Length: 179
Image (cartoon, rainbow, N blue to C red):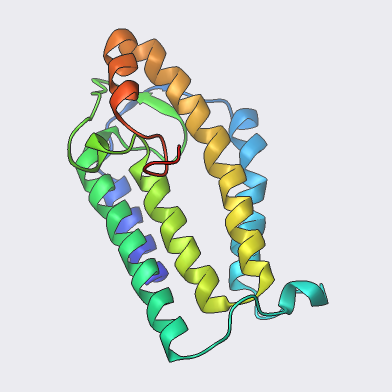
């Protein structure tokens, strides 16, 4: 599933609008390391720390079914959000030429639905792995998404002022009913 998602993401990225403003490389690198460690923890065949290889959830067909369902739901939600934001999307924090404030579709509920979908997919993948390393991977992914969304929110407030403030009042940032 992740491979299909990555292929779609790459193809879809080719239709993004031109960039008007982009965060610095040092800014991007400041929050990217946790994501790289998260990917390693989820994809490595074996991690060198024994306690991280212990199971936090029993294996079995029901566990696998739940894991697949959550991963698929998360990836599909992220794709829906990516399709909805269309040319305004970027892998790094940017403001696009002719940037629009998208507040419909999944953006009517969440300000960062791509991140929300990816986090749900990571939770599903963590359940599939079933080891404590996967729980750590999800926590580290949060250390990637939260600083990045804070920068994005600051830039959107600068770009859209009052409209973004109003939008923030009626939506959740990342997880419905929590934050």
